[in-house]
Image: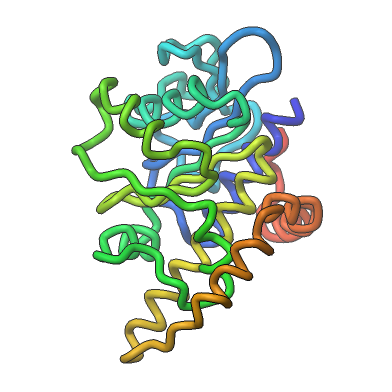
Length: 236
C-alpha cells in the first residue's frame, strides 16, 4: 500500500506544480514481489484526481491485473514504462511528462545546457532519445532502453522528459531537478545572450551530484506536507 500511496501523491504533486497534460503522460511504480507487475494511472482521470485505490495494476505485457477505477491504461504509457521497468532492476519508479518547458528544452538543438547550478546537477545523470512517433510501437523499447543506459534522467527529443529511480520519492526528486533546470533554461534564453560557467565548474558540480537521489530523504516528507495542505485525499 505504501507504493500505491506514494505514486498517487506523485500524481497529485505533478498537478500541483502545473506539469500535467490533461489525462496524458504517466507515472508508474513496480509492485513489490516476484511478479512483474507495476502500477500506472487509469486512462481518463486527471492527475489531481488520482488516489491510491484508483491506480491500475498491469503485467509486463500491459494486461490489466487489477483495476481500481476506470480499468484501462494508455498503450503509449505502457510502451515507455514497460521498457524501463523490464530492463532496469533498479527502476522501481518511472515518470514521464509533456510539461512545456521540458518539451521545449528537449527540442532545443543543444538540449540541456549548463546555465544553472540545477542544470549542472542534472547533466551527469542525463541521456537523450530521438522521437519516433507516438510510442505505440513495442520495437521502440529496445532503442529507448539502450539510449537510457544507466542514467536516471532522459530528454525524449521533441516529446518530453523521463526519470527513473529506485523509489517513487527518489524518482520524483530527479523529476523536480530536471524540470526546474528546463524552466530556468527557457527563462534564461528568453532574456538574451547567456553566460556559461567554466568547464571546471561544470565538472565539479557533476562530481557533487553523484548522490542527487539521496535528496529525496529531505524533499519527499516536505512535499507530502505541502500536498496535505493543498490537495489531501490521495491515500484513499
